[in-house]
Every structure is written in structure tokens, then in C-alpha cells.
Length: 234
Image (cartoon, rainbow, N blue to C red; front, side):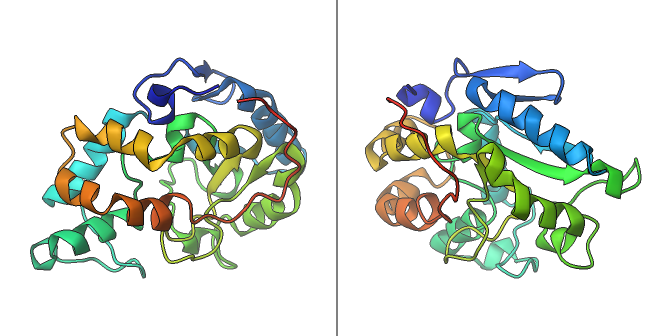
């Protein structure tokens, strides 16, 4: 069972390093992640995990850099925004369509991972993690199709497969449903509010004032898993 610190990324007692994958994952996700990679490798896809567990402080550093203008902001179509022209609420929304609110990132649970196919690109290729890379003319088009056909067999799904008015589609983002679904159910607005209240989050008061809306639009508005979820006491 996740406690509130684990749910919001403020501790790492629920995850472990996985040297075989070069990442950090929830212990229960490890066997299936390894099996997913092995199945992909059998057909010539070299599944590489480029992001996995991310703690609260790391997510907050990313948020604060975007909030302050130290990192580029993009609109829903991937076009650069001018930071100085945005109102506070517009700034918050611009961050949220591409980056999760600290405390609400699914990466906090160790169940979610961003993947690419290393076999499809040159060794020095730097993935951008943009939808075009997974489109029909992108380097990861084959990976995209293979995941659509096979990931559910291993308990994985893509929570941001379609545009639901919140987070932009992220075809690279996989989630291990048997653990992620109970975690999402446990991450209530109250748990999230408590995590943010004492933080150094830029724009904290404005975020807290909008938290019910943010929670509905950017946290729970996901594509449902299409895998069988066994009963799991939490």
C-alpha cells in the first residue's frame, strides 16, 4: 500500500533500482517491464527507458524553471510561448499540458516510464519525446504500433493516448496498470494539497486555489487501461 509520501514522490521506499533496465521502478512493475523489453527485443525493437521514477523535488525543479522562464514553454501545438505575455493562470496551464504538477506526477509511483527504440536511431540520437517521433514518419513508428498491439499483455497502457483537454498525448509514456490504478485512486485532492502546502512551488497559492479543477483536468483525465486488473488490496 502506498502512503502519502510515496504517492506524492516525497520518499522512495516503494521503488528500487533496476540495473538491467538502467532505471528505477516500483518493485511490482519490474518483472513485467523486463518481460516487455524481452518481447520487444525478440522482434528487433530495443526498448529503452529514458525516464522512470521521478521524485517531488526533481519535478518541482522542472516546474519552477518553467514558471520562472528559465525553461521554454510550449503551447498545445508545440509552438514556443513568450513567458512575459502570459497571465499567472495561463502560465500554469502552459506548464501542465506538458509537465505534471509536483506531487501529482505518475512518475512518482515508479509505475510509469517513457520509452524509445534505441535500435531505430543512431547511437548519438537525443530523443525529444514529441508526438512526431511516434508518428507514421517518425523513427519510433514501429515501436508505436508494436506497443499498441502488445503492451496490454504485460499490464501496461498509455494514460495519455488521446487529447482529453488536459495533458497532451504522450505515446512514449507507459503505465503499469495493476499498481498505477490503485495509486491514482489513493491520490486524492486532499493528499495532493497537503504535499503542496509546505512546498517551495512557484505559483503555489494560485495552484492551490485551482486545485480541484487541476486535479480533474490534468490528473484524472486519462485514457483507461485496457488490461485485466486483478484484485489487489490497498
